[in-house]
Amino acid sequence: MIAPIRAVFAAGQRRAFSASARDLSKVTVLGAAGGIGVAADISHINTKSSVKGYDPTPTGLANALKGSDVVLIPAGVPRKPGMTRDDLFNTNASIVRDLAKAAAESSPNANLLIISNPVNSTVPIVAEVFKARGVYNPKRLFGVTSLDVVRASRFVSEIKGTDPKDENITVVGGHSGVTIVPLFSQSSHPDLTSNAELVNRVQFGGDEVVKAKDGAGSATLSMAMAGARFADSVLRAAQGEKGVIEPTFVDSPLYKDQGIEFFASKVELGPNGVEKVLPVGEIDGNEKKLLEACLGDLKKNIEKGVAFVAANPPK
Ligand SMILES: NC(=O)c1ccc[n+]([C@@H]2O[C@H](COP(=O)([O-])OP(=O)(O)OC[C@H]3O[C@@H](n4cnc5c(N)ncnc54)[C@H](O)[C@@H]3O)[C@@H](O)[C@H]2O)c1
Ligand SMILES: O=C(O)C[C@H](O)C(=O)O
Image 1 (cartoon, rainbow, N blue to C red):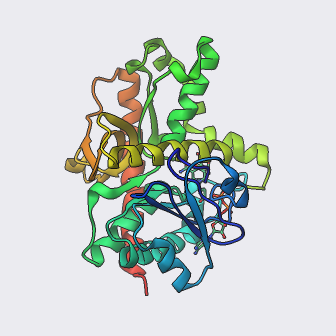
Image 2 (tube, rainbow, N blue to C red; image 1 turned 60 degrees about the vertical axis):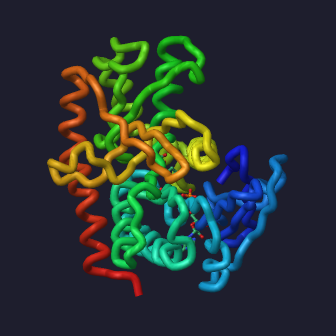
């Protein structure tokens, strides 16, 4: 994982590592020998931090987690061409469940940033494990959906000839296929809501990278950049910065009346994690249809994660 401004991570071939960036912040990455969790090269980045790698043993894992403020989890397998993110469930669900158990035991108060796919299901898995141990804090669990926003901004800028850093596209819902809902009507280019090709590109942007890598994995560099951005926002808010708003997949009040416990929307971050879940806001007819399709799939993905932990509790 490329570093947020306040933390540098390095891992070598080890699976977990942590970085104490400022005196007050310890960041742990679980899955730190992979494409996103990266490796020793990250420790060469010139930010003020100390970096330590841990062996993939229960003791190493506990030591990596102990006292952490932020725990990023990119552990698990990535997609190959032809697969959906849900096809990763059978492998990644138990990986995430077991790492969640370790986090619940060793760093129950950390902010948990879940990258492992399928995010729509792995986030509920973490919640269930924490609930079972009586340490669940809905304000500190985040599914990382920043890459969808990064992609949307980039793709829009290519169409409009703008600088992507000036584009601010809200993306809500979840993190797979039709659950990814870009809200162009809320951007400075409301005309784009009828651009079905663009909407499809945002929803299935991950597939472009999977195809390009041709069996060698999925997005790593853009994900590392997006994950670093999100982790940095969480740290800045934790350290008292006001007005930090990021889209993220959280335990959300927005669609609970429809039985949907988690939803990605803009969230104001604060010292305690989620400060405020912002409403979806005004959307147009095209987006209403997208949202409807999203909610159906999302509900199933969430329930799948919950059912998995009920049937297969961590040992
Ligand atoms: N949320 C997103 O936007 C997003 C973006 C890109 C990738 N991803 C997901 O992130 C995950 C990782 O992708 P990658 O490209 O880094 O894959 P990778 O195969 O390169 O790395 C995965 C790492 O996880 C480690 N791992 C496996 N089981 C583990 C365990 N029990 N404990 C600790 N570590 C373990 C592996 O050793 C490996 O180092 C995938 O599930 C992928 O789909 C999510
Ligand atoms: O597409 C994937 O499987 C990885 C990631 O979720 C992405 O959006 O790039």
